[in-house]
Amino acid sequence: MSINADAQTVTGTKDKDYNIIWFVEACLSNALRLETYAQDAESAGDSELAEFFRRAQGESRKGAEQGKALLAQRLGK
Image (cartoon, rainbow, N blue to C red; front, side, top):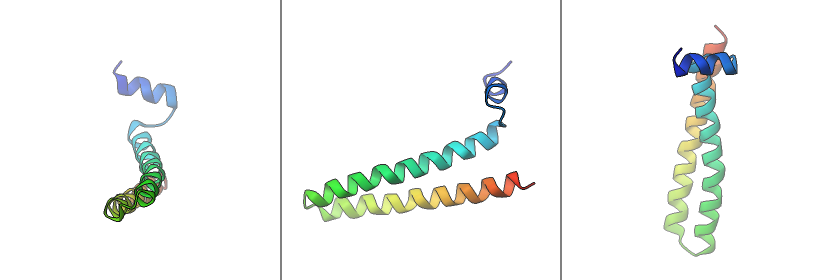
């Protein structure tokens, strides 16, 4: 039995669906972490770095939204 087959047996979720769920969670977790980094940069007076983290945070949010939409589409089938 392959590792992927074991994961499906253990979780009860198809690996491809689980992978999308994991991706969404990782994006949202990253967005939260980046908020802390942006605030730290702002506190240190580094607006350039804070803006960098805010842009990255926006991309993480975008990834989460795209993943949620894809998951909803696939689970609706």
